Length: 163
Image 1: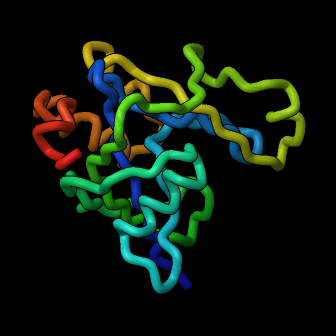
Image 2 (image 1 turned 30 degrees about the vertical axis):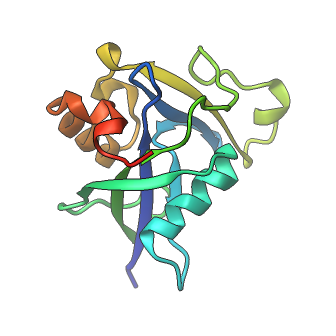
């Protein structure tokens, strides 16, 4: 039986208009995606995103403007019986943003990728002027990158969030 897998992701831009991305090692494969994760039973999308950001990055975020919800069929990259529904929001946190980031994609320590069945993630910033769909691994993230590239003002979170 096919199931719906609801995912919630946040686009966090810093004061230099760089986008935070997550480089992940999942079961022997490498992915670059937007930070976020799976909606849990009894949880709303905004609460999910706040929880995921806190768990993954240690950041408390304000969930701001809704950007996109999947409007096409997408099978899960990890389970071919699940249909993915992804919800994307702009998020903001108080500056300065205190998070450990890397410069090089997939810059994992050896112990982080030693287990081929394991999972690890590291973060990095992508400059607005360099941002394009080639940076993203997942099809729905690529759609969102195209959408935000059409609206450069989204990279200025002050216009879209109250922080």
